[in-house]
Image 1 (cartoon, rainbow over the protein chains, first blue to last red):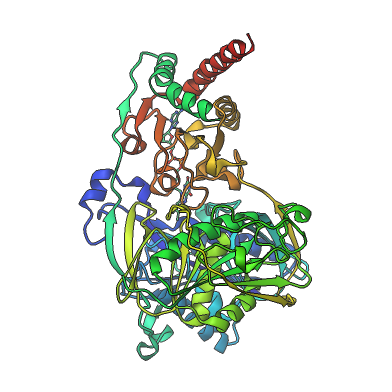
Image 2: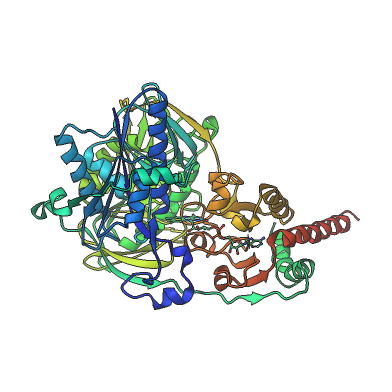
Length: 278
Length: 362
Ligand SMILES: Cc1cc2nc3c(=O)[nH]c(=O)nc-3n(C[C@H](O)[C@H](O)[C@H](O)COP(=O)(O)OP(=O)(O)OC[C@H]3O[C@@H](n4cnc5c(N)ncnc54)[C@H](O)[C@@H]3O)c2cc1C
């Protein structure tokens, strides 16, 4: 049995926020009408876990998928969707604390869950997470988990598939694309993946799981309050980036006219100065 | 600002690593440390011509070392001569693997831990590329220090306060790092390289180590892939976004970039759709560029993308939505179909290039 744990977070799609909304934002919370969705990289991690599970089954093996989120809440439709596409368990580690800039605490909670599972002889073969999520943009959780669990960690994973003797993982490194076969348990931090989006369940798949419910685990059972470590990094300020530019719009009747005007009023001069320099 | 007693700057011993060390040493100067160490991690980079560039295998001419001419040749083992060393560095520690092989970043950790244990600096700086971010987080976890990645600014009183991007690079967040040692990765271009003329005579330590076999992986293979050559330093950068709509239009943008003597990069959707390679991604999780001119075509202007182009001198955008966010952040805006504008621009610029050539020839 291959056990896969995919850790995810729901957050806001900040691309949808207007400048006015940024200016009006209080307490670091986007406007209430905005809905939370899966973190962009977390969505890819959830899909990658499904793909590895598909490979296992195609090779005649068995696999079990668990999705875990550490958060104050989880939207029901997101959990239902995960069940419908093949997750056997969706676990909500309930934590009321402000986790935006606490990758250490999130990692501790996930490690607590993994260790509790191990006590029941349920060992995860792979633990996947997205490599970064807003709001914190921390990019540390997977590494901290791996350090704490003593597992290897591959970052910026873009693809993985089950092969003889392990999992073949492709990841981005500074020099290019690194491929390796991971032969032990490991943590994968998923980045700009080849299959970034989660598959869509059929209506029948949705109906089949309509009675399934999320497993709620109190955060305290994962990291007992007396084992909590005080944060070493404390967020003290948050400010909007200053906009330094003011846009001058190019006018014209057609694309050709506007291109000409853009060239004459802006590009030509810059290009000339570049040419002079070279 | 009160200083600390010891800081270490860690870089890979490759051409890129030396340029990064320069930037890091500028940042290190902010710590007013009594002593500065340079940790050099020897790395066999399959992307580079080893015979020419591996500082451990070439015997090259002696040259005076300064921040300006920090290069692999100058830091080669054979050529190291403390009298000529004019970096603001007191100790140079080099780790060289006896039998270098392709390894993952994680496999550097034992060597890094030994470097740390030897001198126990209060602050350690890495360059915030993929490897540097990873090493910073791992090292901080192992030595129980406090860590901030992608640092953009810092100030030091009793604690170290670090500024970095948050909320998808739309906001800047400040953090107090409570416990020393402080381990930072410093964002690309956050601290301008300066010429540090101060001359010190560093002690030099070379540690030749064995790279242990990592039992958890096999069959490592690297497919070298570089960012569009020189995109980080290009004077003109054209960026294709989702609005470009099709791979063939990306090729048109490539021709446009070439006609302007520039480089082409893309947003995340353009990369995920396979129009461009991962290494050509512009933004917080890709390349940060600082050209004279950046032309963003069919790009909405999201925070993570803007983090990659906000240092451009002139930022021009073409988008068919007059309310697109990018118009809030650019200098020149065109509300129009980006492919039609690209086609016409290419025609105008090619014509101008041809007439310039004719003038030059006559
Ligand atoms: C942690 C994190 C890190 C990220 N890192 C990066 C990063 O490094 N780089 C990056 O790019 N993104 C990154 N992203 C994604 C980012 O948030 C945006 O989703 C992305 O930048 C949007 O790309 P886009 O502008 O091409 O696409 P869209 O947002 O879809 O915008 C397309 C634009 O094209 C316009 N358009 C459509 N058709 C035309 C036409 N014919 N002519 C002209 N205009 C047209 C539309 O009006 C629209 O404004 C990151 C996200 C997260 C959460």
